[in-house]
Each structure stands twice: as structure tokens, then as C-alpha cells.
Length: 387
Image 1: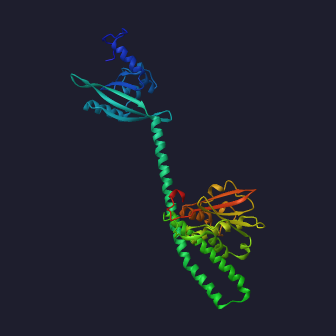
Image 2 (image 1 turned 90 degrees about the vertical axis):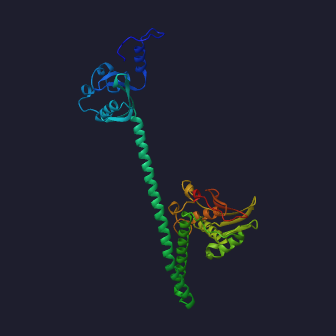
Image 3 (image 1 turned 60 degrees about the vertical axis):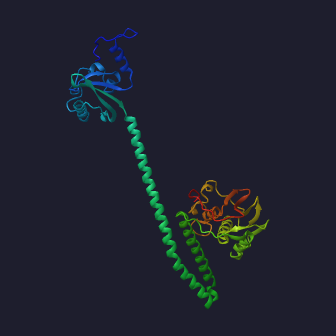
């Protein structure tokens, strides 16, 4: 053993045990040799330092003498078992270092004895406190992420159910109101009630737009996408159709510029919905004393519809989330007097046709939304990341 007994001499002239001791003292592991009484027969420098001691304070003394009877009970059990079985063992041990808990990973290797059971064993340990701390923090982080994921998933599922329930449950009573208004028109009412009836009809139209928007969002969130039915369509004809359905005072503010006769395979109803949202947005947020311009043209084989208005620009901090749903609070008002789904639907219509929508807004030039569509658009699944 490392007790100074003479051994073979190396090239340096030093005894082999001395060379071995020097080597073990620089090894970056805590190394101990213990006997059956858990007495320290050998301790290297790092191993003694881990206990706050030097080797001379430990060698020749038992664990009871150094740390008190009963200290490190789990370690004692492992040592006794290793002596009995003569088999290696691995485990971890924790002890309090001031106010901090330190963790050590160790391995026990009984030293074979030619005369019977092993009388000595080697314990090699290393400080794994930092690793345990990192692992614990990572586990807590994963748990927090998983918890947040579950909350978001539950919120999304609740949102979808809520949209579906509200949308479907509102459709029937709204249909009854609209039927009642139509009946009043047919039977005739006094002139003094005309304006009230008109306000009621506009209100039902806005309610219908809200319900349609919620149903669309529900379909998109469920991965179904917007239902599209492409057919040969003239883009300028759709613009005219949209303007004809608007109040006369609003139409007077709109200027049309059809530079080209743009046609393609598109869903006319969805295009009308998108164009109506863009024109309504421009009328609502633009300078009321200056016109809104709707322009149609062909560029590089694609149809391009732009809607421009003068007035205050869109704030820079609003632009990144402009096409997200429920963004009504980002700007005063909303596209259709609803809940902030207008531009979101515009983007979904564009993506569903394989196109795109973009915006440019400055104080000098005003605000321009551009809806670009491939001339031969078909129903294109919208990636989940684009929703």
C-alpha cells in the first residue's frame, strides 16, 4: 500500500509508492482508501480538502472519530455492502456545507485480497453540486414550460369552444330579428320610424359580420382554413359590387382607378369580404376631407388591389401585430365595428389564394394596403404558422 514500503525504482530514482502518491495528489478526483472499520488508510489532497481538512488529519482515523457516530449513514451502508459482496457500487451523497447542500457522486471498488475477503476498498468521488443545480433548474424550467403549454392549450381549446358556441347560438336569434325587420318593411311603417329601422338593419349587419368573423376564426384555429370556392372573377367587378353595397355618403369618398382588367380564379365572396374590410378601414381611419383611392392593376402576372387613404399614419409599434386577430385596441375603432378581425380575415383570404397583403404607412404619403393575388389562384392550405 501507500505506506512507504520500498518498491521498484523508476528512471527518476524515486520509489514507486512515492510516485503513485504524487500522481494521486494531482488527480482531479477525491480519492480515499478505507478499511472495514471505515478508517482512512489513504486520502489524497483533493479528497481531504473536500472535507475541509488535510490528509494528515484524516489518515489513520475512522469516520466516527472525524465526523461523529452515525454521520453519513447511507454511505456507511454502501461501504459495508461492498465489503460483504466484494462488488463495486456507485451512488451519491449529500451533506450540509454551512447553509448550502453539496452533492458528491462516488464509486466504491473493493481491493481484492489473496487471503480472503477484501480488507480495503477505494472510494473515488467528485463534486456534482453544480451539475445537480443545473439539472434541477432545467427540470424546473421544463416543468414551467410544460405547465405554460398546458395552460395555453387549455385556453386555446376554451377559446375555440367559446367561439363556436357564441357564433352558432347567436345566428338563430339574429335571423329572427332580421326576418322581423323584413316583415316590417313589407307591411309598411310610418315615416317617423324609417331612421330607427335603418339603424336596426345596420346593427344586424354588424352583428352578422361579427358572427361570420368568429366562425372564420374558429375554422382557422381548428386547422380547417377559410372555405374558398374559386371561379373566374373580374377584380374590378368585385370592387364595384362592394361599393354598390355601401352607404351613398361613403361611396362618394371613394375614387376608383382600374389601370388594368384583372381577372383570375378567385372566390368572389371572400374577395368582396377582404376588399370591403380594407375600404371600410380606409374610410374609418383616413382623413374625412380627402378621398380614399381603390386601384386595380396587373404586375408581373399578378393582380394587385391597393386601397389608399390620407391622414395620420399607423403607429410603428402597431404594425407588427396589425394582421393578428382581436387587435381592436391597437387603433381607435375597428374595420367593421366588430372585434378586430377585419385585417386578420384579409390576410387569411390572401394566404388562402396563395397571395399576400402588405401595408405602407407614413405621415407624408398616407396609408396604403396592397392585396396581391396570383391570377390562377386555387384553394391553398394555409400553414399553421401563418395563422
